[in-house]
Image (cartoon, rainbow, N blue to C red; front, side):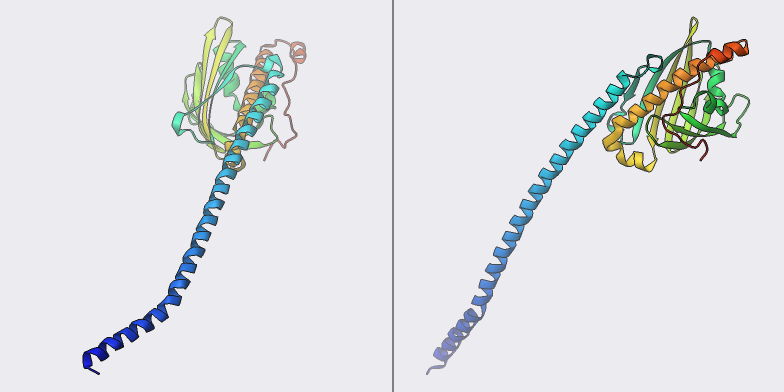
Length: 275
């Protein structure tokens, strides 16, 4: 046999051997590709199901938030008239997070700016004349002669059965026309009191902008924000009612007049005054 023919025959033999070897591997590869396609199809189906479940959960959360808001509105409708004033919950726009709150409260009480400033500035007496909201109040640092720098620790609550331990520091005094405070601990933010004389009455505005750090409120704000907002409105309404009673009590000329003044609203749930 010529040498070239032998080489050609050898190459054909080697090619046949390679085809025989790689043909099963090709079949295995095809099977693996088919399995991978099935796994991809299953994963896509699971992703589609997960997306549907997420959409359903978001819809349920939205419905629950609406029900909570309706519940809070119904409770607000049946609050005592002496304790009801309009308090607006505003938004910070695009930068507002779930745990960010802003409230503008408007009160109107009979008296003078000096009387109102003296009552609200006497922070250590808050648990006495406003026990429904302030369970404890202690001055940690007295501040200067105008009260600037005064550091106060308070334990507060609202209608809901939880308490908040936080501090605030007076950063500006405009006595007797208001003051500004910085909130610390469970709250982080600032509050601005503004008093304006209007004949025999004082128009009071409180601008309260905070971020809540208490863990369970922060964790649930995405769902229960309307309920927490209602809790603040309830506390501010009770504070206004208590302030009116305290002004009457301080203006009383005799012990008999003082005893005829009703006691301030009590807290809704029993709590220890210190903690």
